[in-house]
Length: 384
Image (cartoon, rainbow, N blue to C red; front, side):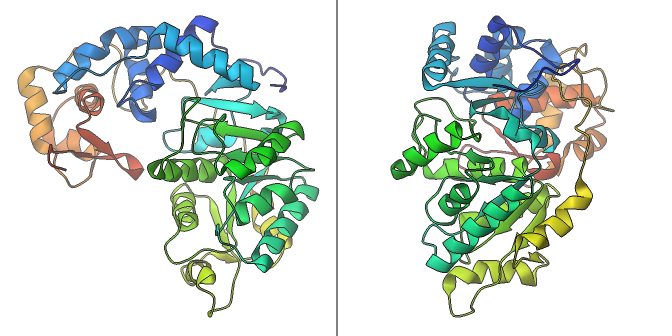
């Protein structure tokens, strides 16, 4: 970790870092509920004490296991052994682009040189079963972006991702991984992962150490790739692929989506050609990326990235009393399988914003709430 300290930046104590890690590793605690818990109770330690009661009020069928202090200490030891560290949002080493995304990860495992986060980042993604020409192009454009002073972000997958990382090894590349940092996937890229960390790049993950990536973890990894970047270049992608998920997420976050055209006879170009039809920017060289990314620089990072403030215009969340049973029932009754925004829920129920947020938090912790893009929520039913 080699970034210079920033004035006014957040710095967690060892005790606080343990509590943050315990809280985010608790089942049903995601980025949104983590933030609301800190806003409500002021610290991760205080939030942990309240979790069993909040889950009970939310209708949890059985209590979940909250990781112990020993569990968190063991994971911190694993990180140190691996040469990694846990970085919290608001700390100087946290990737600045992630702070601009909706529901950023509260804490990340990071290995390598965090100075790479200071470079303007561009993601390059594409097919695992990529063509030789596709890999050659990805490697070349990554090298050109690196020479232009950009960091290249990708997901360490076979094919296009691997080529992109290789092209930017000399200038700085960021790998977002779906499992623990100590469980690289695919296994044959373990050597590449080591090179990235050793040659001025960085590896980031939301997942615990020792976590073997599952199919459902890759969309979460794709979200990290999109969030880390100013723009995302898709080199090759079939009609249904993870690269198109990354492109969709990037578009939802307001990132620029680029696509490389391909032969209509190659199914690996079907997704990229479709992106171009939908308005993605055509890319034939790094100059196309420079042209559209350069006007975005420099962009100041948000001034409020801490987790100790209530949401804007949503009332005094920290001091509001717990909702009465009848108020809780009215809010739950207004929810259903169709996503609605929190503002719509507040307006419909006539409840105070802080009370609505508290009930949503209880439902989330009980595993009964699903959160959607744009801040919408819906109710999960037992048979869903």
